[in-house]
Structures are given as C-alpha cells and as structure tokens.
Length: 281
Ligand SMILES: NC(=O)c1ccc[n+]([C@@H]2O[C@H](COP(=O)([O-])OP(=O)(O)OC[C@H]3O[C@@H](n4cnc5c(N)ncnc54)[C@H](OP(=O)(O)O)[C@@H]3O)[C@@H](O)[C@H]2O)c1
Image (cartoon, rainbow, N blue to C red; front, side, top):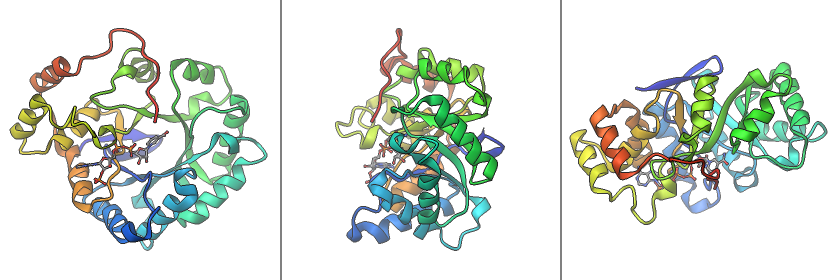
C-alpha cells in the first residue's frame, strides 16, 4: 500500500473524508460502517472539521472509532477562521477533542484564511502543539502566496501539510504550488480527490480512465485516486458514505500506474501551462 510521511508518522496514502457525514439519522449506521470498514481495509487517516455539520461529523467519527486503538489512527481536525485566534482557538480545539472522544489530534489545520493575523494563528497553533493537544499543525486552502507569507513567520518550518483541492480534473496547483511544496518537503493533502462524486462523469466516464481501470482490474474511481497519490508525497481523502465504495477507495493505494498510463492521462487531462486561481470547495 502506498504510504507517505506526515510529521513523524507514516500513513497509507488514502484516508477517509467525512464532510456531510453525520447530518442525517437515517444514514448514520451506514456511515459509521463505512468508516469502520475503511479502517479495517487499511485506512488510518480520518479527516474532519468543526465546520462539518457544526460538530456532527466529529461526533460521528467519535462513535465510529470508539474502542479502537488510538495510535493506530491519524486524526485530522480543522479550526474555522473565525476561531483561529489566541482567545478562541483552544476552546474550539477542546470542543472538537471532546466530540471525537480523544485527547489529541495528529494534525490540526487552519481551515482557510480569515481575518485573524496569520502570525497570531500560527503562534497559537504552536502553543497548542507544545501543550500536547495536537501533534502537528498545518494549513488548508493556502496558495503559493499564502505559503510564502507563512514562511516569513516564526515556527513556519513546523508546518506539517497543506490541504488543497486536487484531482485529475483540477490540476492547477501543479503549475507552481506543488513544486514549491515538494522542494520544502511539505506534503499535500488532496481534498475532493474524486471531484465531489464526478456528477457529470467527466473523469469516471472517460474512455482512457476506463481502459486503465481494465488494465488493473480496478474501477475508474480507484484509478483517479491512484493518480492523485502517484508521487508518494500526497494523501488523498475521498469521502464516501457507502462501505463498499470506501473499501474500494482505500484499496486504490495498492495500484501503481505505469509511466505510459500516466502519459495517457496527461493527454486527456493536461497539466496547467499557466498559474490558475486556487480551486476551492
Ligand atoms: N480543507 C477543505 O477546505 C476541504 C474542502 C472540501 C473537502 N474536504 C475534505 O475532503 C473530503 C473529500 O472531499 P469531498 O467530500 O468534497 O469530495 P470527494 O471525496 O471528491 O467526493 C465525494 C463524493 O464522491 C462519491 N464517491 C466517493 N468514492 C466513490 C466511489 N468509489 N464510487 C462512487 N462514488 C464515490 C461519494 O458518494 P458515495 O457516498 O455514494 O460513495 C461522495 O458523493 C471531505 O469529505 C472533507 O473531509 C476538505
């Protein structure tokens, strides 16, 4: 299974997204099963946030992982921009920890930039790390200019990851941000890695994607995920409420695409040739 290093942990390159999970009582049991089956299939990373259903996703995660060995998991949570200040962040973090039922997060991300000065947010994250409530901190929805601004601040070398939108149909960050992150050994967490369900089938109905899926006796979804994690420095966090989809997604970390297959995908879904605005969701 393809893995990557985040902070001082080595984790499988496909984890579990949880946005929109926990919102409805009628799908709760299936969603919990999806998370549990995903972990049984080899996933270790769960990505949640205080924003997701106002804590409902965190509490679903807490229920799903109850009784599991905590160090087998790598849990990512995120603080809202409005709570990313010296006066509010610790309270937010404590609430999130309680909902998930743990006393630390492996990675705590600044969800997206807001009005609080970046230096204050980073200083506060650093203090919470020193207290042991988070093992590592990172950022999300940061473009190259945000990362460069971050680099000028104290403790910036502690940034453990940047979580941005990235999939075969949205490759804009390959132009300058990804090479910049590679050079500094900052991993990418690729969110929306299967294009939010690929409603129009642009990726999953593509003939080349499907031919490559046949080559590997895999699904088109798995090929899209195997593509996203191909560099060994990317964690993809697909979300699924369906246990079978979730297991398939996790097992996509076993697929290695050939150079020829990658070149074919480059023809269908070309790399950017100029700077693109950061794609967000
Ligand atoms: N940091 C940020 O700002 C940010 C922003 C957005 C998302 N995220 C994180 O990234 C995660 C993933 O992103 P996302 O939820 O936007 O989009 P996504 O993972 O690209 O797509 C999720 C959708 O794809 C479908 N799907 C997934 N695997 C499938 C499969 N094998 N076969 C068929 N359908 C499949 C799911 O439906 P089924 O349930 O039917 O499988 C779901 O509707 C989120 O849940 C969240 O944790 C972070």
